Length: 261
Image (cartoon, rainbow, N blue to C red; front, top):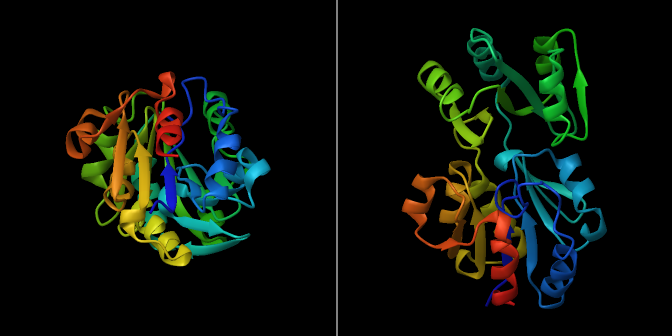
């Protein structure tokens, strides 16, 4: 019996325009009527996801910050922050490299210290609550930080990953999109957050379907009984998971959800 459908957003459910498909809300109502909980699972922050899904908040659960937290029924039911000293250590490594811009994500607000206009324009597409601070390290010490999202002016898989993965030890460094790489505690990922939601919902992994497009979705797909990767997805993820559906530009996730229902 199907109880949960979880989907990544950027590159998966959202088309290249990043405009939410209007029909998802009708589908969420259909899912809810059949006892199925829809779970948007994203690297985006919780306030942004709540804004995107405002018409359906009573009917969904949310995985935010690439698994840093899970939200259900108006409350955070799971949170896995990155220790402060680990965040500060990673920031030191990130700031050694030009064209890498760190954004430190708290539960309710993200913090950054750059005045780069292109970076600010990009981050505000995914972060509804972000604050420019003069002292990023002080903001980290004063707040619970889930992860560092590193924006790269070059393709992150080619540049940021090549620089940061060898340099940052003892933390998870994972490309989360074309120009983003996330740094967080080793145990934080979408899979662990989804497992927490499944427990809260009284569902088994075999009662869950998940969709993704990039390597930061791997653990979530592996935690689900049935997993699908969009055709535009990262080649290695398609190789591991195997089940490929039409691309985000072709509405592959929407079509598959309709088929499942």
